[in-house]
Image (cartoon, rainbow, N blue to C red; front, side):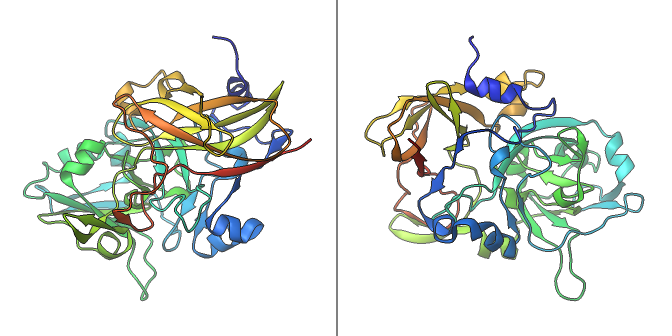
Length: 380
């Protein structure tokens, strides 16, 4: 296969898969709605005020996001955990016990490559869609840890609690999932990220990694796993990460959960004879077959070159890449100078299409899968 612009871009990265630090003659893709448009260059400050840090533009390309610059969405503080004194408490299962960090390292280690994404990423309020990344995580599977405790026992649900409590003021972050959900997701207790020890801002010494489910479930600084016989009635499950959905004529509160089918143009790079639009396609429960690009506001659509995760991570079995993104690029030959509206749209092998608009029967900030329009100004 002949070399393309995106392959040259990736070949310029390090062996760890870091995105190119700077690209000459790159055009900025401007969001056309939400805070990203209203606040412009002040957006990073506004997001940091509520503990959000988006991926930097120079890392928004290729198959793997670097550790440095990986997005963050925090709720509380970043605790300092002494690895020698750390204990993971597992209770509410057949044989409750605790694990030291060394004991967890001695368990069989597995790897996953997956998209990690904030449930509200790219919604109508924020618009910018930079609260996501893709890394290679390794550690013992949740299944292995629970098996070392004799199994679930009577538990049908699990609650994951972090060590980020603020004394006197509040307890640590917590989120619950059903045993079926974490089993199907093949959840991991991550000790490493991109082959490096887990950094403190990413959850050292351990964080949950739940492929295919939004990152509110990827609890950082994991301190406790608790088995329960009913769904977790926690604040974040029931009050924060929820939408209103119209079902059988009635509006119901529904928890955000599985990452929907999405794609996004992330960079516009100068190439011989024009420009290259590159980006990612991910999510859904079906295999992504193709991505189409429009550069004229949706009047016409053209196919992009799509490369699945197996093209980049051939040393891992397909099941460990099930929730990873595909990389796409589209050569945009000699566009006319001026302002253009561009976007991408993903399609699956089963015929599912990424929606052009949001579902009228869903109200809320989460899992907004519609296409993400961008405005780009082509110079003369």
